[in-house]
Image (cartoon, rainbow, N blue to C red; front, side, top):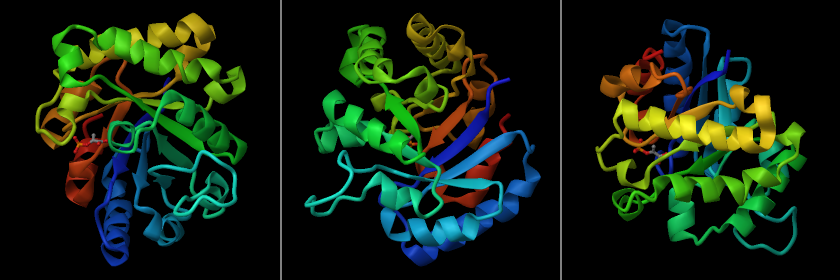
Length: 250
Ligand code: PEP
């Protein structure tokens, strides 16, 4: 049985007070959802500490949205994986399409970030996904394969056993356009087959999340697919009721 995960990427939203309120509501309402669902919230760095403190001892885990590629030193504005881990944070989102697109993150950078994450005991949620023009040109399989080969294939078997993948088609992020459940299953199954080429049977245990305009009204249909193990949620993670309703989609 693979882990079922519903992770919220708050992006650059919420003040510390709003974030605290949000996580408290998520924790309170999580009692309505099957214990089999693992909730993760990923707030901005400014309130990671407060949110992690509030979530301590609850069923809601906390993740960061990014980490530095270097361990420490003269890197103004960066936040290291060690700093993040010291707060009791367990996950880190890496390779989100917004980081690739707006901050020029390449596979070379992401390899370093993955190393930092593992060296500090953080579980990466590694994001892959094609742009609209790549989907239209039917290049989505090849794009996603390269994003996996260039980064995930560099992991050891031990690191790979502690990895979450998020498939997020860029054309579905924040656009209201969702991949159909069939499109999600097709590419999730493909991703698992690519992972199996390198890591064999272990790929059967890797949670692969869907992300891109996932909401209470479509979560159940998408999560019902064999190779979809949950969701990485943006907009709908900012309202506890919606985030929890997505968790009920299992
Ligand atoms: C995301 O950016 O991780 C995401 C899935 O966003 P949204 O749910 O808003 O499309």
